[in-house]
Length: 245
Image (cartoon, one colour):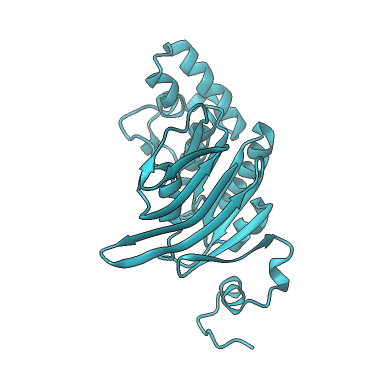
């Protein structure tokens, strides 16, 4: 579904991505792990077309969308995004947040309201919150609303940016399981960036580790425990000492 070849990106002469190569299979759930500041968010923004890479190519659904410094349209491929902080619109009611895509497409209020109810139910919420504002919900509920919005356009690809950040362990577990269930239910390809190994192990088919601007390890979630890569071992163990046995 997504093929990234030799992707480079620098800011003020500081190299962030140093030749990333990545293949994401259609219908899979891939997780990109790595320390803060390693370029995970930059990589996602490059795929989304929010940032132009300096070099390399990006192919989505057999369409080359970035090559030789130029972006091309994603055509009919729909993309959903769950932002790290939820990124709900404070001034819009919950139903307007969830159906934001359809509102922009000119759908009427009844359609948008019903669409919101349908997708809120998928994340364990009901219509009683339709006319509330985000500030009237807890952090965990806001994250669920943001997830409902991400799937409301029935996307082909969904990106999750640190989906459990700021949540307590129980709420985080709820979000992880919802992501796992919903992605499989709609048959979307998903890419999650996180430093939370509990989340990575729960929702992934395959894990990729980004380190110093490159993918230094990748494999299924069960094989990561057997790796001999010292940087991966240090990360999954949460050790500040890089002199590991």
